[in-house]
Image (cartoon, rainbow, N blue to C red; front, top):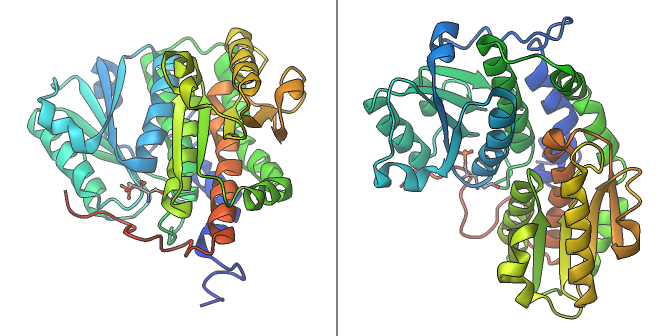
Length: 372
Ligand code: AGP
């Protein structure tokens, strides 16, 4: 009913709008005023977390994209090696796991069969399993050694939005907590990250307030045959997520690439007028990466692509190459997915609406996939 949708036409629109609150709820009570983290509900002892020598993340679909981003954060902040794999492939390749492995299973519903089977396999091998989940008391957290709930509230639309952003927050918290218990040097970077993370709800709100041009652009692309998404570093999984949203909702061909891979093949796809969305990392700090993606944008535009550039406020280098420019707030690159994903959600939702599709219930899809 309209009331259930809180006045929005679709649950997806409501859930996109709820993201600032969802992110705030995931953070609630977990960052102390001294910048130290408390994850009380983790039933894994700190001594166990100090002993682990590998993290393995398993998840499906959008949750898998959150896991890909988590890998960048975990390895950079904790120096613990981290692998990430789609849950449906995991147990079939006989992965190497033991009591020193921390497996993180990410799932909104907590009922995804592929993820459940992966975690059962991991536990059989003696690994410790931590679930990052949005649904209280669901099967995945019940069968895990520990759980960190995302507290996003119920997600009804098939296309995951607020669950994704809160999975990211939970992953960042786990990564920082691992660093804290393992005695990672708590330098200025981490202090800044924690500060920025606390500010994420406000930044997401800010992005939501500026989405009208994105909606307009989406409507103008309703007849496009295909859309490509490019990113580097954590912008790569964001690109994959943007493409997945468009496939699910608009039934369009969409693909995400690591921008550095372009020259190894995908650049052959670029033709006159092809819409290409590019997620640009912050020019501050890791500027080498930024410069490289600017030349990627230049290259595709020279070959006729219509570029939709998502870049930080104040990033002037991208301006000459952007046919359309979407500004996101300044934030450290590792946290950028929290703000960079939002325009891609809005884009896919609006494009699907323009095509007359059922946004909350796309064809052939179920909210939770309880078969392998
Ligand atoms: C996301 O938009 C999808 N509907 C889908 O990829 C989903 O993220 C995936 O099936 C995993 O679901 P889960 O988080 O409930 O395990």
